[in-house]
Length: 258
Length: 370
Ligand SMILES: Nc1ncnc2c1ncn2[C@@H]1O[C@H](COP(=O)(O)OP(=O)(O)O)[C@@H](O)[C@H]1O
Ligand code: SF4
Image 1 (cartoon, rainbow over the protein chains, first blue to last red):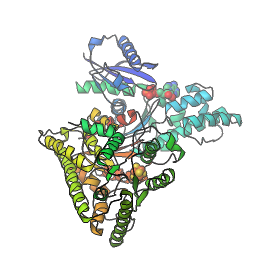
Image 2 (image 1 turned 180 degrees about the vertical axis):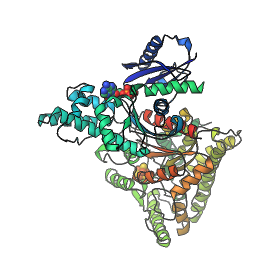
Image 3 (image 1 turned 45 degrees about the horizontal axis):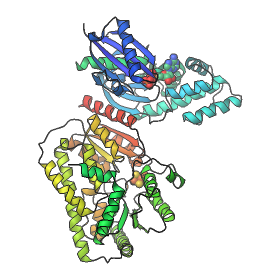
Image 4 (image 1 turned 90 degrees about the horizontal axis):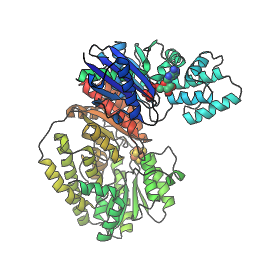
């Protein structure tokens, strides 16, 4: 049997996946990136090998992806997150035509053809508005965990809006909303709405089809997915482990290119 | 072979100071595009063009709004840092609001340096347009006569036109070589050569170009994949062209105001109304010019098809003329199955990671689509 690895060294987390020649996932691992993205990538890779009971020699080729893909010098080849997420989602949900990937520092929307072929894509500009980082800062301001923010948002009572999409201004706005006596739930919902608006605007740039999927760590945010479904009017398919889709796609590309 | 050009761009201010001393000629700072520098040469002065730098912004923020384009903001920063001390007078055109605004700021901040404004008409009548351009050039020439202390003569003009014609031909040859043989030189090398012309006296630059064009022209032709055309105002910051080389995207042609839009129409032929009109309006469609007879969408479609290339719109942050046209052009090209993407860059940016991901993703997209 031949094995292939995909390492997604993102802005906040490193993800590793190993697949065999039948596209079967033998193991995956997600871990935070500390100071050193290369070390985090290597460590995620080693963990996934341990889980799969494989040695490095067993792996035929490695594709790295993600924000720090070039720093992962162990890789045979590097590909962008765009191609990797598209490829990864295409084996889990064949037939998806729109993919929304929201990670720690960036958000992307892709229009897909057959076999995860990217027909068009759009990316956010350099700021963190509409990304995981934004939620993390806001969750911190509300003294909530990420899951806590999502749960709180889903139990909102009154519609409230954030006027700033910028992370820095957003944070002080949240603090001032709290001091005005608004509930944490209502504010959490306002935060989710603000991000969802940014993401929908991005997705509209490539056109939103009927078969929509979402990947990246932010797809774990149930409140966000619910709001996005509302806004676009279609259900959104979310893989069981949305965060590893890029690494999975990278592993699949490693296999195809061999 | 390219080091001289790299150096000219790296040390542009010192170079201009050196040439000024050596030739004793007055230097006219030109804010491109569409002012015929031929008349500056004819008056025995030497034109230096400013298209912005990668310098971090600090002092210019006091005088210009943060939503002005970063081209004009970095030009002002350069001036405030004393990097234009050698300039005797400035010529501005009215190609966009930001440049007009910059002209006013220059008048206020540097009162000892004359500011000459060349108005580009926004009218549909070609006759009126030509009359207007004629008036503009006559006025500009008399102001330049005052600055240079020299008389504008037929003979001076004739010599200048010949020199610029030669220069223009060499640049067009360079473009032809790249179209034919995109592997002959990297994007960074190509645009370094073109940019160096902004800072060197035309006769000096022409002398440098000749041998380079000859050598490049005799190189073996290699076909390349991942072919793109860049479209926009100017490929600044120049450093960013290195990202194309690094990623392996081959720029085979361009649609830039400082590139083919400028050179493909030829040099100025004379200072009569018709020649001026051809100099300003005779090139390929430009976002900064009002010319209802031209359609940039179909122009780009043809160019992309004939070059077998995708299109990348090189957008400079808050460049309004380009920002207005981008959405329409993008959807038109997509409808016609031309791969197209765009990025927005601030000239003072130091890191291009986000743009590199975009470019690499575009390359991957073109590879699977072809
Ligand atoms: N359990 C969770 N609930 C809600 N959001 C989550 C959860 N886990 C991760 N996230 C979000 O995912 C983001 C990280 O996504 P990821 O795709 O790993 O980013 P990157 O690839 O840029 O490192 C975090 O900023 C966080 O907002
Ligand atoms: S054309 Fe665009 S980049 Fe150039 S000065 Fe005007 S607004 Fe700025």
